[in-house]
Image (tube, rainbow, N blue to C red; front, side, top):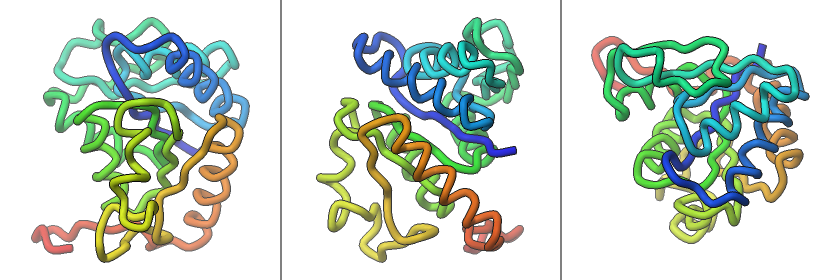
Length: 191
């Protein structure tokens, strides 16, 4: 089972970005993967709707202790008891790969956490927010760190849901065949 996290803008989102998120959710489900999101509104709800329309399984990693905040497309709401910032870390650590659509500062933090974990990360170009700016702020348009660290050394950028899932599925398979490529946190906090 491959678990793909979708991160992105919450709240009010432009209709074309919501359609993109829905199409990404559909593509995730059509590839037999499980969708994980923050479980609430905006990009998360649109991706969840798309995955459900395609018969997929949707897991919502929720802030707080109230499962009723989950959008109606979430099959399995997981309450974390955490605020949004720590909930996001649970989402990242529960996913095998991340797809970024649009997004504000919270999404940028999630992107950084996934990159630090050396996870496959695909940024949907031209989707607005930080996703549209990621390439211009990245070193050489590919790296979030001057050391150029990532599980394979770079971010991937896609323009279509199909292209995003091609990147994700290939890289998750490579990672599963080569365990140990992700950054592991030691008990004492040392990296």
